[in-house]
Length: 235
Image (tube, rainbow, N blue to C red):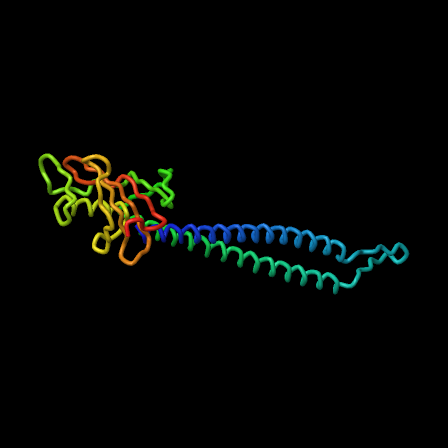
């Protein structure tokens, strides 16, 4: 879970960057559209004022045209303006496409992270008011870890016992920590024979978690709540 919370922090930052990038791209697209509109309008106006004018010569009956050089020059300017607009549109489309690809990659990474976490989506909830708790989480995806025990269950805090090992497995599941590298700093009764609380951390990760578990008859221990601690109060 230590790595999962780090990933959640990183994703918030990445999502913020992506949102800013998408906003900038949207603004650029609006600017380009306005520029194209103004450019087309200005070009049409200029063309209208520079087209050859025919002046009727009432005396000679001839029609005099103004030089065609002005018209050719205007057509060239229009082509240049259109070319610039097309290049700007292509740049905007390319940036938007890149942002879309990055968003798709992020969603794929989110899916992979969810799979690693056992498809247990965490939901942040209101804490107990403990000043040492940074955040409190729960999940509807948590399930009992199973059990080898049969008959009436008796909680055992003897290290190495079957019940201890199954509690350790449930705590690791709730904290999102690999059980093999998890350090159990404290494991105690949770206030009733069917509940327990463990304080753990993963490997060299300084993040410490307080995991609440409960016994489900026939199915084993199940995590019900996790608190991310500001400091390890059991070290």
